Image 1: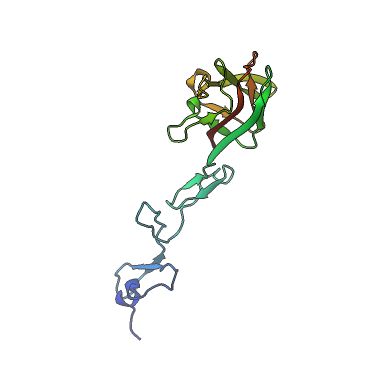
Image 2: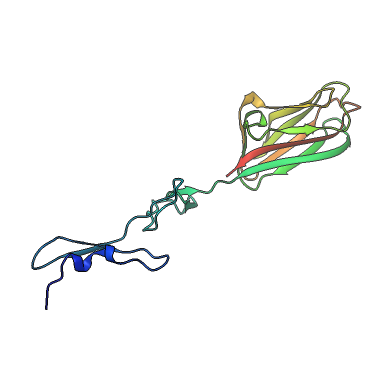
Length: 202
């Protein structure tokens, strides 16, 4: 009987099965007794050129409660809620203080300042241009309290201008409602308004 040597346990002499990960061995070079250790490399996340299979990083305390998932880059993170486009078209002319549209949120959504993040631009139009400037007031109803969060204003050429209150982003929680309300003095020729804006969900 002969003693095992470093060559006998050299992991480079073998290849793992398809899709598998080779457990690497390490010896202390002792003689005549050789102590062996086994280990598996950590997963290497993709940074643009692909990653390496291995043991995934352990989630931190609270990651499960936060709804985190392991990403391809090897980190734990909450999934992006994605974009939240919201738009509508309401035909006809409008009465004083008419509720044009409303939506109750089923997930948190934030609309960027002046309804534009620089990439997703608000847009709109109308089938009947107003005689004078026509304004829809955008309101937020949260916990029974109503606040004004912005305005959408149509010029006499039918081009809308989108603004948020204070020129800042506006956030809505689950259960909050967004309302679009016509001006107190209706414009007789303004009709068929349509608008689309996009927020970010979470």
